[in-house]
Image (tube, rainbow, N blue to C red; front, side, top):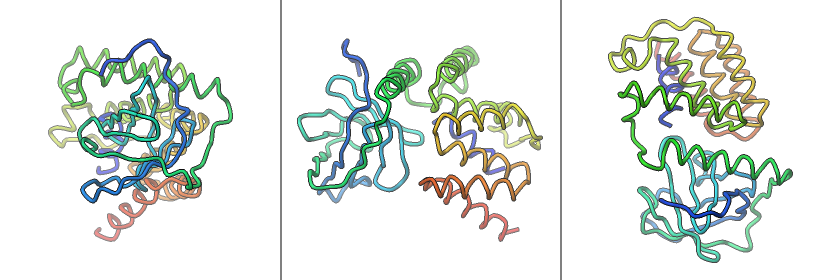
Length: 256
């Protein structure tokens, strides 16, 4: 059941001017502060940021704002020359400076595609996160319907993050919906070909965490062989989340 909840958790997962969103920020930003959980952020110039070794998140830049999406929250920074200043919960009142002698990876290969992804991510932010970053929509039927339509539209148009959330929504619906989750009365999951196809679509979009969520889905179905294969593939491609999911699965099996 914990892997169903992990998959469902994917969905929980300021004002801007006219300048188009982009994700071309590239470099290793480090802080000397001892009071933050995030000593560095390494931006790859292509929409992915290494969040202090905890895993990679998505990001976009608009005007002087940098918006980063870790698993569930949002980090917002104000950018000035070679400095990021935290401007939201978890990063507030801390500054990260560009470390010029670092070997930060630059993964930008297709400028048009990268800009499209950044603009879709900005649209996602504007429609689902700008006004609220809590779980209120999960308890409001109309809000949840509108949210689901937005996520489905953005996924169809090519935003991998939206497809990841759609994956979580589909899993949640298959086990009884939000009411079943809240009452801890989840239905036993049965293999759903549509969910598997969506996981494969996410992978084809270049999102390595597609392997992670697909592995967790297979594990929830009891297929440990396929789960391990997907987690190992994600780990081989650089995912830290897949290794954690596999470790927790092994601990869960040992506890049984």
